[in-house]
Length: 394
Picture 1 (cartoon, rainbow, N blue to C red):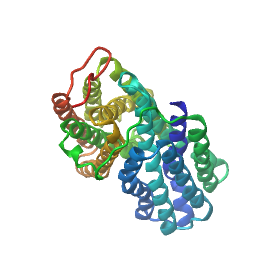
Picture 2 (picture 1 turned 90 degrees about the vertical axis):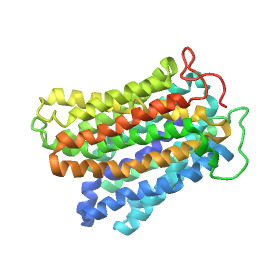
Picture 3 (picture 1 turned 180 degrees about the horizontal axis):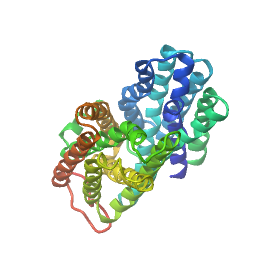
């Protein structure tokens, strides 16, 4: 568990090191806002391009090898970005390549853990793993910003990329293949997933979760910058980083709770809490600084409570040999909403301000709640004490 989470942490540092040094890159290269945005989106595009093949490989080959190759492939283009990139074309190409390979880390790592951990404790295992994604996201900003301020942005990108090169030593040297692993046969993609109502409902929950989560992350800094009580400088950025780390704690808590009281109960509770926060947060800009920061951290926590239980459910409602493919489809569908929700938020912001913009994110949480209700009716087996689900899949 620790080794796999460390592999993800080292790889996720690459995902977010560019946004952390973005102002310096813009100054050095004279980028327009559109050009800077294209380079940011290039890694996302690479990830979405490769996520289905990554899941296919994780089902058919050792996830330990897939993660190892994915981590090295993530690091090398990022190191090249730090060393030789000089503009938007080469920079975007290298970021795209990193995105292609980071898909070989995240989902195959989940597949590997689901093979090792039984359903009774799988929620907390995946909660810790997904929480590592949040931790790496937040600390990437801290590490890269600190290094860029002390030395140079290229050094910052290089330092936060090099760690992923040691992942093969960790995964191949310190982990073992799980016993009794089965591999799928038949066509790819697995069209049978589209007939699995529980899987489709869980994927819908994840998609609406991402609608809310990434909408908040895209716009929170802008909101804090104009909040009267928050001073300028680095504090708004530090608060955003701390909120992302708080989401990591929320992931761990959500996974642990889902093992004890049930997946769908935790999903429903987390989505209700985040819907309330999103519905009201745009009205809270006038709060005193200490109170606003506290509410923001709590907001980050509840936003992520439903993440680990959703992914855990996906591993439980499909056949064991299809887990990698199912997680890939879930991730591809879920990340597609992250392109739309920030735009909807921006449209509402232009017309009515933050008081109306944040409730557009609450609408996503409410749609997620409807999906949870459908999910609960679709589960092919009943909850048992200490577990969200029990028995065997149909």
